[in-house]
Image (cartoon, rainbow, N blue to C red; front, side, top):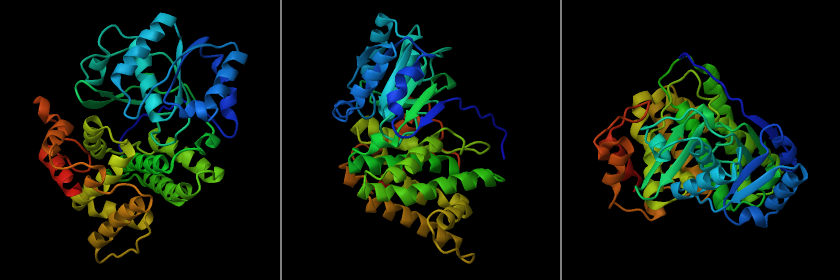
Length: 392
């Protein structure tokens, strides 16, 4: 096990009706907030009205900015920064899923920065403070409600980049599984693939003597596999949502990744798809993750055999761990296919025309600053290209 430091100070309020308490919960944090959300679903569902009523009843002033789209855009973030400065807000309240939260985190950074916000995402600048971020979660998937990560798309540069900092870990997150009942089935499936990938990026490692986090990863994956497909069939199952909602949070607050080298190659490769084609993050991961597994599994076949047996329920065979490993990967693909997720790039309408461009973008080769990606196996742009080609 590697040395580690773990500090995840997000206060989580979990359960039925909790979003109606947001005004009182905000009182110790802010007097005026930017209310930041996505499209019309927040208003159609009644969540917006409930939040506004709670803010007004508690005397919390607010200004609002909607319009966050999947793969949140830098242009809207900059609009939010300007609005927040003009109105002198002292916190950002995100109502939505990962996109609204990531956009809110970027705004919280930008308000406190003198200079170009995008420079932070490209590691050309640093920031020493950010406004507090508070969350009401409406889509469990990204885990951004308790993570220190914000991923933003620069439309002009066609780049999607993540920024990590404890400054943007939310101070408070309210999670009411009742708010997930109206999610479309494709969003549910995408979210399940996303949260599973967050665990895979931590689970598949060459680090030894990490039995506890191995077991925590495996238990969380089994919980998702048990409850996720059931929600695709019945999106109003509160008990299943309660399990899935907390699993998504645990998957990405990094408790599952402490003491072990993490990977993140699949995310780096997928971000190129979202930046160029604007596809759903979870859908891209559902395609690419099994092919990444097939490309790298021989570098630690026992780790993949362990996954196959302990997570995917493959019968153990000490005579042929490679066959066991491949059976586990095939079962994962079948799980995604059973939830009507795409399993090839062509399912997403993506052909061969931009594969090399995306591969070079994933590793930095396109800017002349290539760094290998991944932990379990170091990948260069030629490796990323091979995975894209396998996924066609």
